[in-house]
Image (cartoon, rainbow, N blue to C red; front, side, top):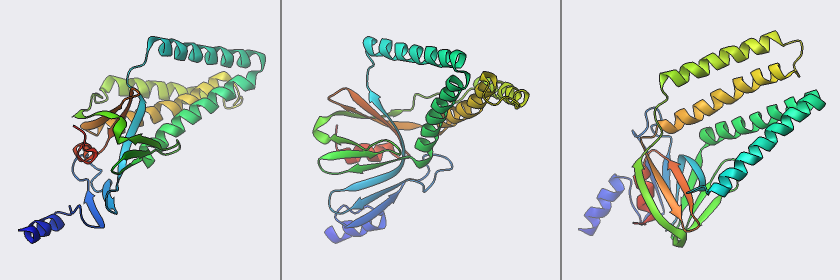
Length: 237
């Protein structure tokens, strides 16, 4: 009986006692078949690739929201001041911020996150940013649920299209003054909106997600082809 079970496990590419085993994530996301993998490396270490992850506080307090709003308003005032007092500085600062945000978003959804699960911890290795190590003892809930992100409605896509057309027109009409605010706004729109739209589009392709909530009220939202497999590997009910 034991040898029969082992044969079935090997046939299905699932063999916990094996030194190396691979399980393909297939069919969950159209066009992503075979992109993600779960690889057992050694006895109790499994590495899963091909996920997109968002990580942050489970609930943002009112004080934190106010602080973020004030910081954003202060940055906006700084850009306006620099644009008036030192014209190229504010414009270039705005361009640098947009390039950083758009680049980070695109890199995150294209390079994606790998998830390393061991007996005692979960390590989320994100592109650009440092890895996140979550001890299993700190996990209070793992939940697989439907993705709440709506499909991009046609009017949002149309609005982005109108913004891009206007931005391209601004760029063309200000080619002689590439440091002007109108030119920089056009360039930032052409970079920012497609990058953020693409990031949202990638997330909407995953019908289900897995959320990991920790004792310090942080939550990791993982968009992966097989969130159920991740939840099972975490062994948290």
